[in-house]
Amino acid sequence: MSTPFLNVPAPRVDSTTGEKYYTSEDAMNLTPKQYEEWIYSSKTERVDEVRLYKTKFWNILLTKSPPFLPLLFWPFIIYYLITPLTFVRFFWILIGLILWFPFEYLFHRFLFHLSVIGYQSQKFHFFLHGIHHVAPNDLWHVFSPIHELGVQAFIVWTIFKIFQLPDPNALISGLLINYIRYDSVHYLIHAYSPTKISKIPFIGNYLRKCSIHHRQHHFSNPRKHFTISFISSFLD
Image (cartoon, rainbow, N blue to C red):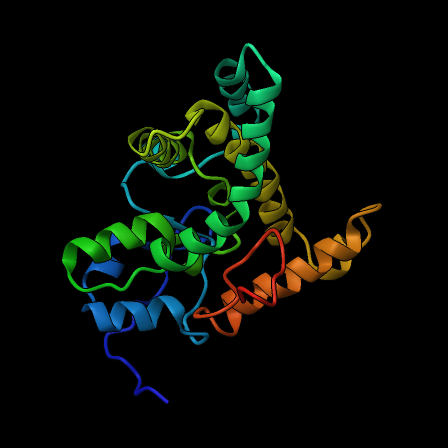
């Protein structure tokens, strides 16, 4: 068992709303070792939100996304990428759909949970995923902001182009289609208890299992249970 770390950030309290929150200073005043223990410890007090910027406008614009708003944006991008739709392009879209499952696991485990070794990697990790771990009930931070996911999607698309895969547009479209499914599941997991989520017709039992699995990641063992929208005994 690890020894308790020093200078544990205490949640701040908004004098107007009573909401508890952390700031970027709370995270960056810790050493990398203290930071990782703080982020992942079950003893860390979870808060309503993390405020990286002093004004609410910039916090919402740069770090948050209204629930399901991105789902109104990405279908237009997908439509643009796959038009005109041919049988061959449809095949590569299916390949992209399948690729999502290892991508979800690999991105979560090796990028979102990268080892923090210095100030810059700590700052990057906190913005990318640390916020979500100390404020898991901030539903405006569950969906990736459009600009954040856009950068990730562009990097993946560029890798597809570099390796000269047959249809990068179709492949990234398949990934984005499954991303929409993934983030919808992720939101439901954080918005509702396993009991409530189990009552959703047809897929309730599947969602309940995903919810229990993901809650273990957040509140029991953050070093395991990296799949979110599906459960795999082989990967997890």
